[in-house]
Length: 199
Image (cartoon, rainbow, N blue to C red; front, top):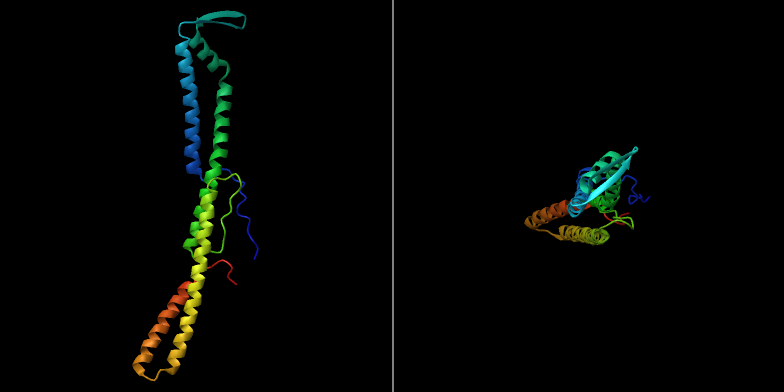
């Protein structure tokens, strides 16, 4: 059986809603921090004057006002670029936990459909590797227990068949037939699961 290399992800925007919220939060946090720094600097420098020489003109003004005008006039491109950089960094950081979350959701969908023949693999830079390890342990344990239940059901079926062939009482034969039918239902349910190392 060919193993699919599902742990390699090239799409960095996997969980759009979740990552979008975090990217927006990072952006707002950085902007709020910048604004707070500017505000504190303005309060501390409120009683000072600043001289600016621009286009052969010498201008005087209160430091906070002059700095704000200069930032908005000449450095808006840096503000926009800084916002874009913050958004990109936030996207890469959120990808480290959004990717594993997406992988866990896919794995749960497989398990809901009865497929336990897989292993969750995360990249070395991803978060939640311990959770992935626990998921894999759970999958292995459940596969082992379901396989054991299959074997026990097969043994019960053999015993019921032996008992049915040796029974002469009609009432007991009917009860054995019901037990055989019930065990067959159990075997059908267990047969719907795809387990690890199934042949």
